[in-house]
Amino acid sequence: MVKICNMQSQYEMQQKVMEFMKGEFKNYIAQFNYEIPKLQDLGFKTIQTPEGNEDVLKVKFELGINEVLDFAEYTVGNLANYERLDVFVKEFAGFMPAEVQPTDAELTTAVTEAKTQLNQFKAMLSGMNEESLEAMIGKDVDFKITTEYGISKEKYIASEDTVINIGIKDPTTGENGSAVIKATSLVWNVNGDVKLPEVKDAVNVTEYENDINKVRTLPDDTPLKKLLLQEFNASFTIGEPYAILGSDFKELDAAPYIKDGSTMVPVAVIGEWLDSETKWDGNTNQVTLKVKDTEIKLTLGSKEAYVNGNKVIMHTAAESVNGRTFVPVAFIAKELGAKSEYNSETQEVKIYFE
Image 1 (cartoon, helix red, strand yellow):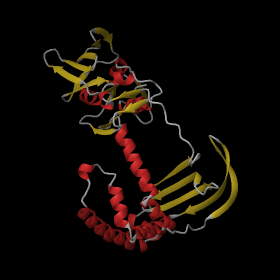
Image 2 (cartoon, helix red, strand yellow; image 1 turned 90 degrees about the horizontal axis):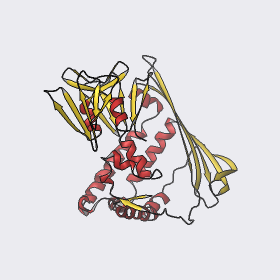
Image 3 (tube, one colour; image 1 turned 180 degrees about the vertical axis):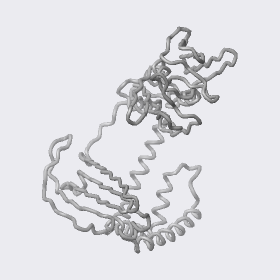
Image 4 (cartoon, helix red, strand yellow; image 1 turned 135 degrees about the vertical axis):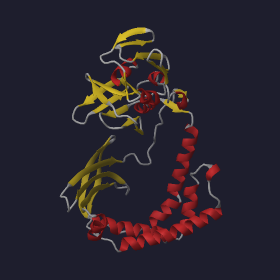
């Protein structure tokens, strides 16, 4: 298990959130009095938890567009008229870093403006239903949320199973789309003892986030390793001027293409993706990429490459197209210890580290 250097500040934030949940947030929820329509009592059923079976009271309800709009109207109005909203906001602002926390006067002004906006939003929602919503967006919408809760004997929600069905149709063109979202959650051992994981090593995460070789030295069971490896993943789509680099969307000035079975991408993108040094020598038509301890030299029009001085034969040579230098991305990835996958249906190439 690896501990990030700012763990102390994260722990302090968690403590603040817990106090908020115990205090003002609990007061707010206590006066929240929305009645769920069409609530069904399914009786007691048994659920499985990591600590064994538990009998819970199962309840089920379904919400369509009108019910969701009604709930939204109530929630917005309830918050706008909450008599302790100023206290609620002040405690919530306490989670912000000290250097950017607003003053009491700024909070008072913000609360007043928020109440006005919330009431205006409530007024808009009060006149809206499924028919008017469809008219506003110009689409026919089918929407339904089905949720089943399991309530424990201690009166907390021990389980939840939710299915959201969404369908949208354009009445003019007839085009339609649909989606089904399923979510399941389980809660157990409430108020029980929690054993914290043992911290064996401590690292500064900033020293690892730009160095794939350092990330690989982390133990395989370290969650941080998996998280950082994902930031070194990349995705390119043939013929599309964009890429997904880690968690970032990157627009490209030249789209990837396929030549002789190899996916060719602009070398500048590789440099940005892996935080590498990229050099171009116009006299030799040679481009050099240096990613930490790995140096790769490619010559335009030649299938010979040099990796840390050792000659390697590529399947496809680097080339220049419209002033942009393109290189076979799978070759680069392989020499850096990454893997690549190509999906012929989506025309997508994925590069990932394990």
